[in-house]
Length: 226
Image (cartoon, rainbow, N blue to C red; front, side, top):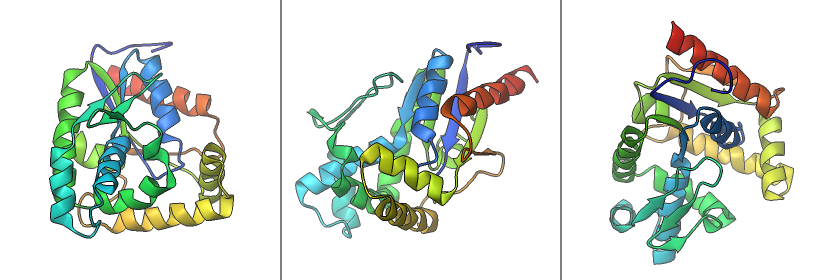
């Protein structure tokens, strides 16, 4: 860590809804730990991109699962320049576009897709001594034994402002889309979005990114020294 203890090994699980600051906070925290970073949401987005490229029906779970199992993902874990390819194609840009954003919740809700990607995520976690993993089910499903589990949240207005600024979109439309995704992700049968019982909730509404990172470093320090 920048100050204090840098553990030899640690897994930090960062969950929360879109716009809560997960990605930026997780990347900066991984850098402070001299560790790596895994964006599990990008994995679901990359598979969604492949499903859309194939022209599959999002309601056809078998077809979606088949494509997911056949899609070869290359996952970069450098927190400064995370990088994704799907079947050899650079998808860093396309997976953030509106088409994938509108479809990813449906793909991520397919239980077999989740099982497949969770297995990959666990392999990546096991391969690194220090890793920060962000998503929606990290503390509850992917890495239930993580050294630190946090659930980042923020007000709906703050989340919409952040996301619309990132994507250069209308804030009202962005807020409506975030609410739609929240409802979908929280109500799905397989691994719904929720705060794990032992996760520490951090409301980032009035906090700068550096403040959030410093707070998580303090929390991790207290965990590994207790």
